[in-house]
Image (cartoon, rainbow, N blue to C red; front, side, top):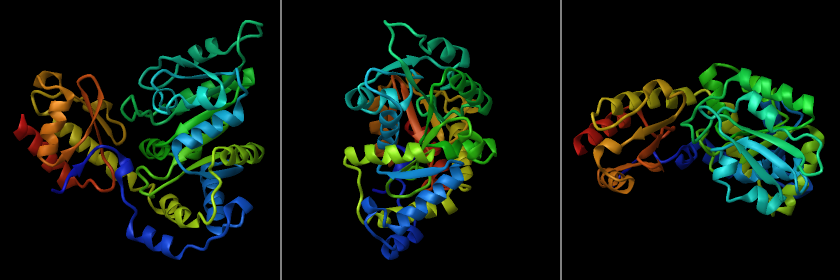
Length: 342
């Protein structure tokens, strides 16, 4: 059976152009800094993200954790949103690896209130940990792909600079945010010290993420990547599709957003389902199935039997994600199929 796969934009396969680039990539030992394709990817990423330097890492989680390790010392506290990816979905890595404690703050639609951040930054007191880092996430996965406003990021960054606390951005889907806002991605990254972006989600590269920041930060981050076993050898074969992702795959994210709107509108017409169409900002749709009387597992099982894949996201909430391999026709087929099931 051929499935319409809405589980995640991580399921995208590399394009034929990416596969050919992998085949012909010029390579060298990256631990020695001698892989020309890696070097080209990192220089390109730094330029696009508006930072001095960049580092290729194996995953978004590795990029985020290298950032925490580089910014912080054991015993520091990291301020982040209560449903952020770093807090919920990275296996407690910040405490396990960096020896820091996290201080989650409940945001609104994934965005932290700058005043809440200001209150959370610790003063000088022997009883308190040092506030070592503030982490933002844009777009915000758990909030349903919401875009954190540029003004909010700007206000938090100004507070952080005043208090001498660095800001890191988990920008796994940051290009989705930039496309949704119609601005260059550097418009967002100017309000953070460091940023991680994924190449292997909507941009369709098969593997890898980028961590970017100042040259001195990246120099130290490179050592942390090595400590985590992330030193790479002839890695140009996986960097080559990343170059194509950055050069050719960003603008087409608008198609995913359009298909997400189409899917949300279609699902909202099914009486037993609740979708807030107006809150679908990028490529993630959260669908409330409680009125169907089915559990998440039962609902997803029926969808799978009919050739549709999605994932549970909360009690009675199912997540659908659009991406390059989900076409307009597939969206319409999915709506008709789900309507028929119910």
